[in-house]
Length: 134
Image (cartoon, rainbow, N blue to C red; front, side):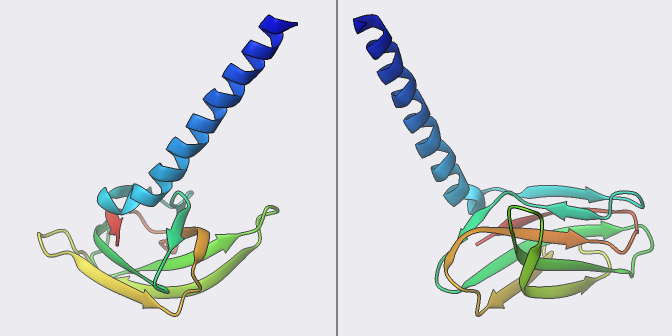
């Protein structure tokens, strides 16, 4: 009975550490670029969940589109457990931004909370890019 209790406590401790690590990783997504690629048959990209504080986020990014002028939609969404999405903010970015400046979007009036995602949509065009959250 003692060894079973020891193993159970060890597993519980392991999962607690894993949960803490994943939670911290969610908060640190603003320090790295998130890469995305879209095509005709895969026109949506969803980022990993993140936390909104101060009721706003800033997206700094780069994008390249096959025709150099089509818009890419960036949206802040929350997904329910059955897949229904709620859009809290959105913006269109037209054309290529692949130089050192890129683009910057500030989305405001987003309720503070967690489990938000960035949705990138290309209207069935080939596109690729990367963005960073702040």
